[in-house]
Image (cartoon, rainbow, N blue to C red):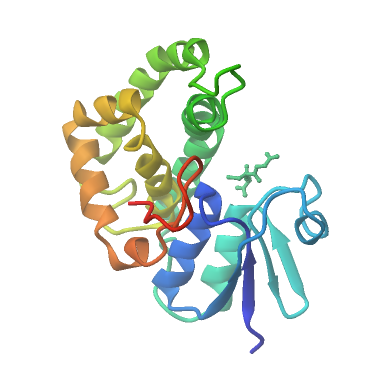
Length: 218
Ligand SMILES: N[C@@H](CCC(=O)N[C@@H](CS)C(=O)NCC(=O)O)C(=O)O
């Protein structure tokens, strides 16, 4: 079998999700750390986003499609359960996180911290304050979602968790979101337990925006 190449800068939460999936499956791969909107990425993603993937003749973009391919093309544990209801629940949580949580927590709140458009380079306070009330509600929702089993679906670490954990990691990096996480006992426990997982530890980005590449992101 040809070697799989995963393309995309390591700090991207979606690249990290794919790397956790590859580690969980035990798939050997080459990771090419390439930024969005570059020739290599534009050749595969119509809007230049990362991650993208090459495997022999197969090229794919979009993290959910890439993880689905990884799950079906390789042996190893299933990332999404075979059971119809559980498999649909995985899709449900991936969709909720990608369409509600990521746009607010990552694209609005984190962007205002990591890539501020301010004169002095400080965080965009207005954008951050505007995001927080809804974030608080969503943190409570996610706290409730993991309270029963410590997982988003059933009692195993599925693709739904692989998709969410990288976002929680970044929440722990900024003061307001870190404080929110501290106030959510189930979510905090969920985060700490899954962060310690081997597949998560071994794929953790070695750099994050605003931090020198030589420092450990953790
Ligand atoms: N729906 C896409 C989202 C990918 C995405 O938003 N990637 C970000 C990095 S985390 C990116 O490429 N951003 C560049 C941009 O939006 O222009 C997926 O699941 O792969």
